[in-house]
Image (cartoon, rainbow, N blue to C red):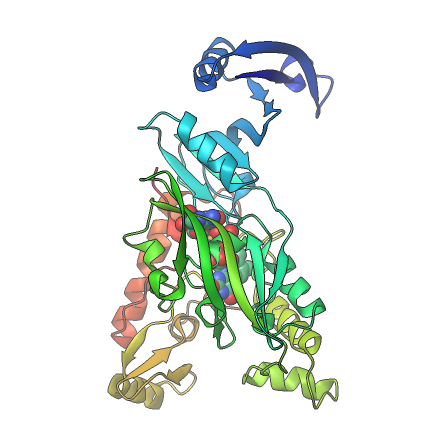
Amino acid sequence: MSFTLYLIYDIFAICPVVENGIAEIEEIEIFTKDYNYYLHLVMAILNRKVLCHFSLPDMAISRQFDVELSRISTFQMGGKVAELVSVETEQDLKELFMSMAPDRKWFILGGGSNVVFPDGDSDITLIQFTPQPIRFEKKSEEEIYLIAPAGAVWDTVVAEAVEHGLSGIEALSAIPGSVGATPIQNVGAYGVEIADVFDSVRAFDTETKKHITLSNSDCRFGYRDSMFKHEGKGRYIITEVTYLLSTDEPNVPQYPGVAEYLAGKNITRASLSDIRDAIISIRSSKLPDPRTIPSVGSFFKNPFVPIELATKLKAEFPSLAVFPVNESLSKVGAGSLIDVAGLKGKRFGNISIYKNNALVLVNEGGATREELKNVVAMIVDEVQKKFGVAIEPEPELLEF
Ligand SMILES: Cc1cc2nc3c(=O)[nH]c(=O)nc-3n(C[C@H](O)[C@H](O)[C@H](O)COP(=O)(O)OP(=O)(O)OC[C@H]3O[C@@H](n4cnc5c(N)ncnc54)[C@H](O)[C@@H]3O)c2cc1C
């Protein structure tokens, strides 16, 4: 196998007059299957002072080296990662794993909106899918499969479903990230979660190096949970997700904010796009836009507590958000616990608790993992002391 290696030097390092920009300097023909060897050799020679990018003519794989992690996560925190590999298809992924050293550390990344990267430099290969188009398949007159590759942007998929008149995911509008991550924590909002519309996934099993299909029950979905966070962690890479959508009228989420939005627009029979617009409008008032205010959305999961405790807390603190779950459990809004504990809007060093939503932690710039850990520990502690309720983080605090 042969491929062309393009070395693209950071021109700023060579010519300080040019602030941005890259220049193609050199082209080398390499004849080997073990291209990692050559890449590491080249990187060593150039002392990593180079932005190196290469493409293989027969595979849609591209690599970047020494990538700033803060650029690829919505919390904008972290050091550098040795290598970021972008793949297009499940075949590219397989080829990548076949060529990678067996003990090479890797991590699959989506849009970086539910992970917090470590501070230091990490010698690990991050793998990311590039966005690819979705397709539809008819199951019956009323049921349509939406089949989306892992790299597709989730909100674009929701928009396309709405445009095609398909209901089921409109309440999950404006959630950042990729399709491939949606089953991981069983993404949910406004009374809907991925498990409700999930048919199956195609995944690459990194142990057997085979592509497999997993059903809804295989994934063992729970509240912000699935088997991908447990026994499947570090083993399965999702390459494609199939959702089962409906041509039926949509269910309007039963939330006061949605009702208010629709009433304000005199909408009595909400269409799919009315619901999507309502959700986008409500979310934009409550959640910071990660493009301008770095966050990972909700930082804590809503705790489930015994009904007796929830009733006692609600009597003592009427503004707590308490929702019945079943005959023995209630769910308490973690944001309302943090708010009633008096922490909303407070800033601790470079981390603040968002002024419009106590569930969101914001990186005010330059925050470190140590700072974040301290703030998280303090919040967990305050909530435990005041209410006797344990809360836990939702995003993954990665250690490579
Ligand atoms: C402003 C804001 C609002 C948010 N609102 C919500 C909300 O309402 N509801 C909600 O549930 N979440 C919400 N989130 C969290 C986040 O958007 C979701 O969890 C989203 O699904 C993460 O997608 P991602 O592609 O960014 O995943 P990443 O953060 O890149 O990764 C998350 C996890 O998924 C794994 N993963 C990613 N792709 C794959 C794959 N192809 N195969 C296997 N594993 C994979 C990663 O390894 C990692 O463990 C919000 C985040 C922000 C910033």
